[in-house]
Length: 192
Image (tube, one colour):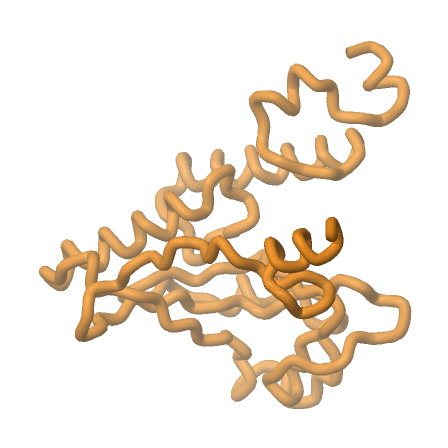
């Protein structure tokens, strides 16, 4: 543990019981502090208007809970629910002149939310790699030079009912190899 602290690495005994992260210790600790603060605010003040999805240890469980709450409220079977995603741009009243995602922060978006949605949840803290979100165009665009990861706008995760039960597709045992052949074909081709 001592060596990890000296080399700015998350100690193995902490990493074994914490969320998965590749960050160095200093960044990991700041992130941990933000996560604890988010949960503390939720506990003290009740449900937030928007949720920091990347702050959850197991986001899949949270999203399943959102579907369960919708199913109970509307007396629907959870097996027939999926999410629809609406990007919250606040375009009408706030930033018609915004040119890039760097000039509008999530703090601004959170301040503009007056109350949580009637159904579903608002999610923030999402990022995109090798692209950027254009607030002016309300779409994904080319990233700025030298910027690898860009923030995304807040998203409304809205449950809706489908006609057929949603089934989880099992992973395919065949994956494409570098030459376009399925992985096992590529493996047998290279060994012969």
